[in-house]
Structures are given as structure tokens and as C-alpha cells.
Image (cartoon, rainbow, N blue to C red; front, side):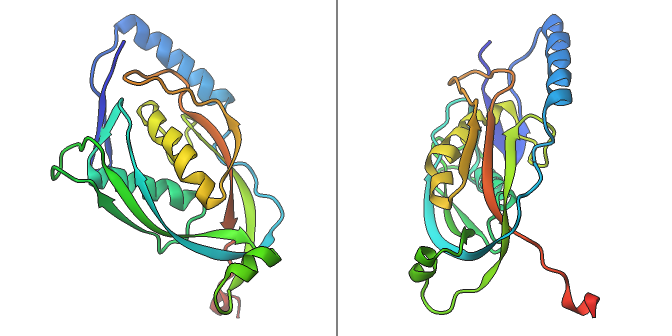
Length: 211
């Protein structure tokens, strides 16, 4: 069955319908998948020394199954990238907006973002001035319908696919396992399903509280 969805203001709205018999099958399959799936985040590895790499990136979304408002896309991309290690001062500005509060045919996001990179001699040499170093660790994150913090939806398959192809490589986010198979204008149970490794800063203890 073909289904088209809209995400408006950051909220997921589903269109179309589902036969009652299929509902029970889907519910059972979903429950089984959630029972065997990992929580979405595996234990982090041992910390490494890292520094912040800042860059500006333009992202243009061209999905067919799910349409976003400009604000909805901006907020969702920002949420995903923060979970994958981006510094909290990440700036995301909506672009390509034709209609206010309505899904846009080709919305985009302009990012001003800093993410951790390992403090190798090569990366240190690329920094201008004294670069702050801090501990960070590689964290494995599953972008799937597994009850993780991000709550990835089936209709977001094309968004995850485009982030994988156009944004993650620029941020040093590594693909560990890729079972994502998006089909335009329809959804598939178990999609998307992408596991990545992202370098994430390790929270430091509050000195004032320790003293």
C-alpha cells in the first residue's frame, strides 16, 4: 500500500489507512522486533583525546514519501546530530522555504556545526590557534525503530538515507551496519535500520560540586 506522510512543526503525521487484519500482524511483528533489537545505543569505548572541528554544511532534503515543513526538518536534523555528538551550540537555519507552516517540496538546512575529531597530529595541524582538547569516546548508535531516544519512524527512511550519504561522512560518523532500503512513496516494516559510530565528548565532572 502506498502511503504519504507529512511532518509539520516537528510532529509526525501519518496519511492513508491500514486494514484491521494487517494491524494485528504489524503490531506483533513490531513487538517482536523491539524485543530483540538493542536499545539504540551501545556502551562507549575507552576515551580518546579529541578536539572540536567546526564547519558549515548545506543540506537539501529530496525525499518523496515524507514531506517536511522547513521548521520541522530543521528541528529533526538538529535533534539527530546532537544525539550523534554535535556540540550544543549547533546552529541550524531553514532554507528553501516556499510556504510558512506547510510542507515544502524541497526544504533544506544550513548548519554551523562543531563535532569531535581525534586529536591526531594531522587534525591538530589543521586548527588555527590553540585548540581545546577533551576526552571523547566512540559510541555506537542504532537509527531504527527500536525504542531509542530519537524514536525514528518508518516514514523517516529517506531522511536517514540522505543524512547517511551527504552529512555523516562530513562529520566523521562511521557506518557500522547498513540495512536501510528505502522505497519511494511507500513504507517497509523494519526501515530504516542504520547503525553508526559517532565520536561523542565525555561529560566532565562539575569542579564546583567536587570541591
